[in-house]
Image (cartoon, rainbow, N blue to C red; front, side):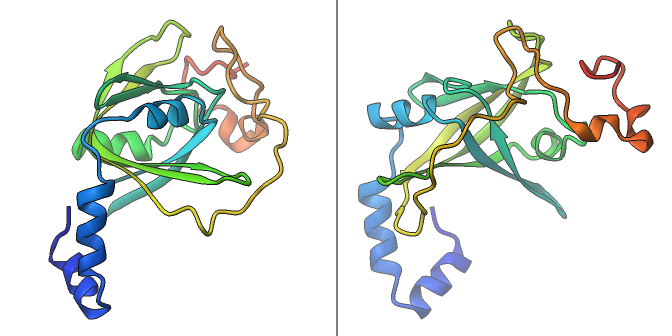
Length: 190
């Protein structure tokens, strides 16, 4: 779980014993029931990918259940309509290592890290999305939530696709300098 850079800082700041204890007692090889419940009720998570100099950290959101745990170490979600840059998923094509961070901003905050290897499964999905993103986790660990703020619950984004895959059109897709560059099958091209 730790390379020599991690170890250098752990040793410099007397953290090696704690790091080893956390690895031994808080790193899981399979999703526990509470992890499945947390993930499948999440309305968002953060995804980190890298390939060479291309590093990307992005937000993914949807209605609760948009991420599904499909096996003891596997989860997946449908890739929703985006900005067509494919920074995260393009990195995955070149380097499948991925990090996911699930956070609950509440009076009882939670944080869960999921690291593993990612594959892209071409669609369309049953909702009409282009592909499914699948992660085979090899590191599952809760993380200290002490600095996570308690945010008041607000309305869900109007851009979350409904059960048919339809969603509101983001304003940036109306921009004159970008409108004609939308992919041919973009649902908001008109």
